[in-house]
Image (cartoon, rainbow, N blue to C red; front, side, top):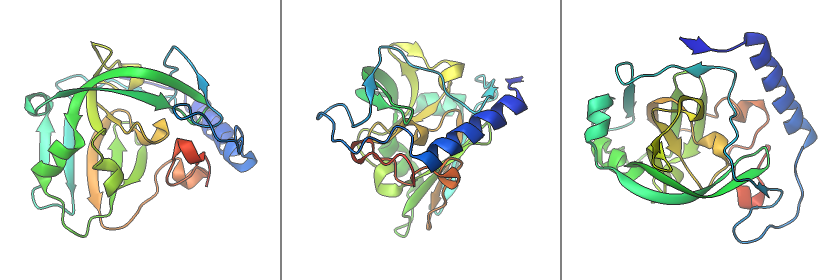
Length: 215
């Protein structure tokens, strides 16, 4: 079952598109080394989504890695769980202006997935597809960074449904909308293909330190 109110979802989308048009939260001021400009530190993890929270249990979970790769694969839960997992610690930065320090994660490093599928030399971008229909895009080199993971634990507990569990993307150097929740497919692409928010006024790159909130 999925939770969601279509009217609420459309209202949320319209409001965020208005933020992009108005440049809401832009400060033009450099931040401290750790806190990006325009951000405020929070101790919690606010829940933000499109009004739909898919119910993905271990039986339903499936992750496809395909596109311009030598070895496309499809993993069920057992297959994903069998991949080597690592612990990492990183900060989160959301475009809605909150940041959260020192999050403890456990998951599969992006470089492990890259080694599995062996993208073609011409691959320049990665597109994430989620169970709720959400998509977002990053450059291949951003996905291949050493601090990027597909995470299934946060602070010692399984990633909750509301935060994108059982598995979500984690790209800590970019605003959090690039870290797709409920990921079901990772597509390695030859050309860029902007995703849900990128086609609605948000920046294609999303670097918090240069305040790339809107395009």
